[in-house]
Image (cartoon, rainbow over all chains, first blue to last red; front, side, top):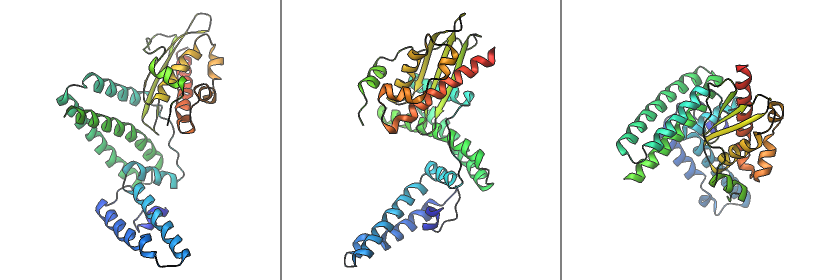
Length: 163
Length: 125
């Protein structure tokens, strides 16, 4: 849980984005390599390592999917290929719907809202399961979350192209 | 990252895109998804009277390598017995398409799709 330790945040799926960002700015300032320009070479090296670790941790912690995957990784849970046909058929139907309505902005926006709502629901469930330490179930949910998130990004791009 | 000529060929001219009747007792349907990238793959095989796969179709939403892997697999499957089909390894797919290491998971997805389709077919017998 090194990344959470760096930010002195309790390891969990739900974190405060603003708290994370504030801590990031503070830490980045404290360890910025420029501040060590006049230090000896060892201290410069240490600052550089710290600075990149602070960055890596931030990139993982601020992203819902990366943060969830990191939590699972720390608990030695692997995310495997998805094989629930019902879920996958639904994803394909979404893909087809997006393709069929690629010129119809209002329809795309309504699909986007639907996906957005699904994602919010998944986040609530992820939070519950991570809090309960039910990592198996959390892994299943983040697995599905990734597919829906990808569709959501895709549809947002299509909507932007129509603007 | 550049795609190999073989990937581009399958991507631009995918073989055997489409669907078979999933309710046909001789048709096996495999659906798999790769959470690494959100790719979704459907692979269907149709077994002939003689126990040889006579048709294979696919539909894939994903990157070029995922589409090429499933397209190649439909070609490989035709004319094979189920046992032969089951022994197709992702490494053979990756090698044939010259997939770079970051795209190996696409060939794994195709192998998993074959296994899922065979399993579905066997469950109908």
